[in-house]
Amino acid sequence: MLKERGQLPSPQVASGFDTERVGPPGAQTEGTTILALRYRDGVLVAGDRRATAGNVVVYDRAAKVLSVDDRSVLALSGSPANAYEIARLLEISFQHYRRTQLQELSLDGRLRTLSRLLKDNLPMALQGIGAVVPIYITHEVSGPQAGGHIYFYDVLGANFETVDFCTTGSGSPIIRGALYFLNRWERPFAERDESDALRLVLQMLETAAEFDTATGGFKSTAAIYPQVMRVTGDGITDIPEADLATHYSSLQVGS
Image (cartoon, rainbow, N blue to C red):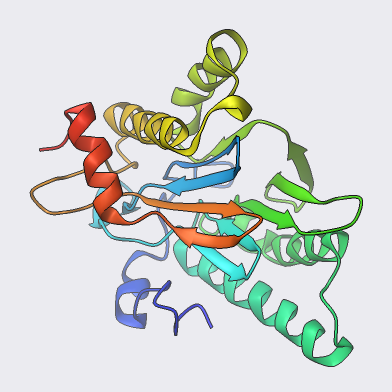
């Protein structure tokens, strides 16, 4: 389970930030920045660590990038309470299918399962206090869909596949144009190695944190780093904080 793997906060912490932005229906409810970027060997998935309630910073070590099985990652923006519950239910659904059918759920089946969970959350989203806008990343090991895939969802559960990168949350408009520019006119992300791609991801998160109050940046004195996972044909692994610290040192950021 996500809790057993240490990917979810304790109930006492989670209950303290069940809404990131409070407002009427249609208000911004995705106070965060999450990012998925396809590089030469796979996909990097990253998210900042800040959780907010209105204009108040509640927690600066929130987990927003969660592995839901051995080949899938869910990056979360929106209401933490609802987002974590959707991640739990998604993981349980995958496990149930695997144990009862003795095979893995297909990619289309996994996408539809997440769509259904988001659609079931629609009443909370319409109240303006419970919207969840995730990114789903997976690496298929065989078949016609083999390779890495990045899907983003809207609050109604519709999913869309993107080829090069995806970013959602309140900080995403700040960096989306920069990502497009770098991928189109500098060096395509798919040609970059992991070190180069990771450096770019950290730069984008710091840029979002500079202009979006709901996105937390790197803090060296408090040892607060973003979450970054790699999704490749070898599985899902976390980028160690020591590696992140090395990159941040070269970028000369943090205070």
